[in-house]
Length: 378
Image 1 (cartoon, rainbow, N blue to C red):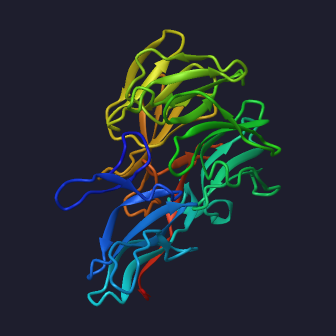
Image 2: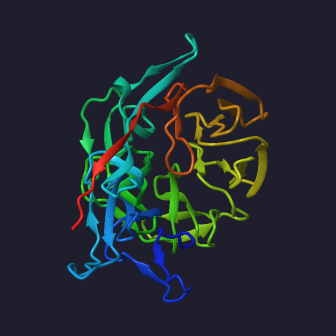
Image 3: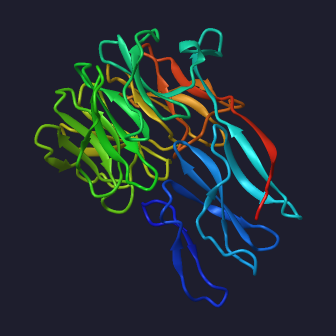
């Protein structure tokens, strides 16, 4: 079972329908909703997502004359591989599980050759964001979820986060290139906004929003951040925060949008509707929303001159990469993504652009196999 806008939890109830209660409260991490029993009913197998991978756990449920029941869960695997979909064998002596070694490759679409070519040596990184001067970039390693910054050629790397938060998302460089804003997620906790110096240090959490706070982007003055807040209980409300006073204002009529981004010139906010069937645009000068497009929309990015919005069509039946010109709504198809094996995690596959507008995508090169794990029980 799961709580609305909160961490997933497991519950237990007797066969008669009584004694409903949560279980495994002492364990850190996100509990997978699927579990299975060994054939003799003595052990319950389940999975926990923590430190950016899934491990298998077991807890004894039945005892006998020779064994006192110990209800303390026991970890069965400890990485580095993720294990999912555990099922015990008929005799209960083995556990069959899918072992996944997650790995991705950052690629750039080359319009001349119409091929996807490795970018930054095909590093396993995502959420790439360039500084306004084009000299630096921030990114998140996959699957570790660690925030780094480097020169645009990949040199002068500096690790910015470690365990707090445990997973960084969608970093954005400030207009002066000195700071990076991102939202961080920890298993069992709400997503929060953080700011960190590009030279390193301790991430500063911005105490705004009651629930998940997502998708931050800077305003041109470098003193304000636009973000999504789920305080209404649903993805939606777009807000602007003063980073000095932490004063927050709400963008009018901004509910039920997500993954919004602010144009570099600060005039617009754009983002897909929550059903990913529309691309909407907010004009700060007129304080009005308009519909740019009516089609599948996934990740969105602005060109550095604020004239174009680049986007992909997410997980639609006809995946492709487009750009639309704000002035006249002219739509251009830049790349066909059919047959491209995209890495999918979170809400939608990530995509970005280079400084010259070339599409950036994350190719899934993970490996997975079925493993038989020996299970020895007392």
